[in-house]
Image 1 (tube, rainbow, N blue to C red):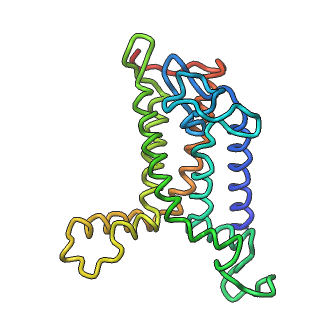
Image 2: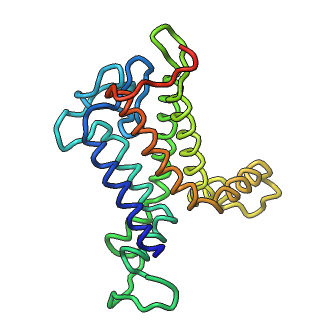
Image 3: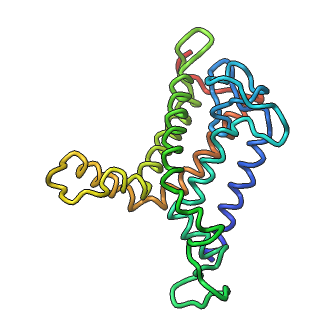
Length: 240
């Protein structure tokens, strides 16, 4: 049963995210500068100019999402994440399906051959995820806007909460833990890095929880902005 729910949860997110990534509309709220993370950075020539904070240099073709510069790296970061490996190794790849359970594969090659050898690139996808998280933070800051100047609404709460949780998921990554504390022979000589490693290690114990939570907050953030951008609902405004 846990395997079934894992498959259903991951499949639901992939289907929703794929549809929205290629939707091509309802991603930008001009009045409040809300930009959904599924379209950030929006670098296609088909993007609304105001939503293109980093220019427009990719062609506007149907098979290329507006955020093609970031989505492949974010997908790769998620797919190679240690928690997701555990989830789909057991539920999809069946290698291994569980402790002391025979594999359906005739031979076991681990992560030494395609496609699983790509897992070794996880640390590099982590660096890309950090850069994209900075961009998402920038988007969230720009969203404190209204037609008259500074503004604050429910959309801001959702965007900021999503960014914070994405940062927690990213820095709780095993690669981040290695970056801040790896290759140190004496923690006593590096008190700052030891403190950072300790904090990341605490977050790392809940990496699975953050992985699922951020899937939910990404969908919630995108869905809310889609509803506001399409005119289906109005943003609840507190200021402006």
